[in-house]
Amino acid sequence: MAERTTRRGFLKLAAAAVVAAAAGVGGYLATRGGGQPGTGSPTPVETAAEQATAAPGAARRIRALWVYVGPIGDYGWTHAHDVGRREAEKALGGILETRYLEKVSEDQAYQAIKQALEAERFDAVFATSYGFMDAVRRLAREYPQVRFYHCSGPWEAFRDLPNVSTYFAEFYQLYYLNGVAAGAVTETCKVGYVPAFLIPEVVRHINAYALGAVHGARLMGKCGNGEKIEVYVTAPLLSWFAPDKARQAALTLIDNYNVDVLAFTEDSTAVLEAAAEKGVYSFSHYSNMLDYLLKSKPEARERYERSHLTGQLADWGPIYTYLLSKLATGTYVKEDVWARIGDFTPIRWRRPVAESTAGEREGAVYLAPLNTKVIPAKAVEEIKRLYEDMKELLFEPFTGPVRGYRIDPATGRQVGDVETIIPEGVRWGRNELWGCRTGCDCFTQKRPECETMNWFYEKIVTLAK
Image (tube, rainbow, N blue to C red; front, side, top):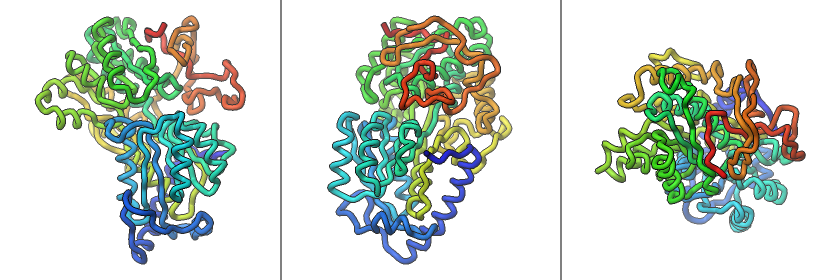
């Protein structure tokens, strides 16, 4: 079974690993030179057995492979992971050598990774897409000496595999705050969302965004104090990287449904660009897309600066450095890393609103800079307050009462009536937010009564038929 830790316990582990890595890496670099990372032929490395018997704190040279579902130039999900890879390479110095495979389709992942493992020896493989789950399960059995790390996959799917850990940089809290901004600025009382797929991860982000939009409208006393907010969600794109389809979905929401704020899960800048062209609002996703657009299209600076409200950003560097430092120092444990607001930060508790770090880079997940020229000051203050409270889980978006309706997760089509999903006084935790009711095993037994992320909040209007 995977090692489970409390939030505070996880932070203690992270701190201990950093100390161990610092001591080990320092000793290593004092006695050995580093190879050229990312290029050239493999440098001879210790065997898995040698690594396993290494004394804790004595860093060993390791080689790691990243597998990406999209291109590293997407400026979204894959780009952010690749930046994290390079950050870990820099942080760990000469003890880490990396390679990557990009644009690996989920149905070809097994063969692509197996071919890489046969051609070169790797100590670690980072599979960075939810859809790589089946491939990792097969490969972990075939290569027990390799440590596999699966991103966004539930740890329960790998409970029987001692060489597989899971990790994720979680956005549902940030999506709620984006929703607050959306509800505060909307003039039509109609906001939208373009999803890539409707897996539990994306569904919880959509619901958090919709819940936040009601909060923001209520805060500003608009849209019938939030009661008249409508959140339009398109049918899933069925691709993580589909700029043309994402743009068309965004234009449909704007032109046909009068939506004036757009969020999305898709790995390009297409939705943000469409929003800016139409004079409505949107967000960054995974990477700071505003910086990219200002550099690549400086002639549209004013338009992009107005349209960009904030966004959900991930820094995978601290997570990759943490995991690899433990592997390098012989302190590997099978674990599940679920990084939320406040994790991997120097100050891990809430600050006063006046000192809030909302909109600044920190930790593994954080808000993009807040557009204070557009978001009302009252909403900016509320976003900062909630951001700080979330660091200590004093506020959580999925706290009842919450009402919604069941959907077909393949299409987003409504299949049930509006009902109470989260009762009053109940706050959902990790299991429910990942899609499986506590006490159920959703990976060996498919029981509808166990599923918890197959619904949309009652303010959501699904456009799937």
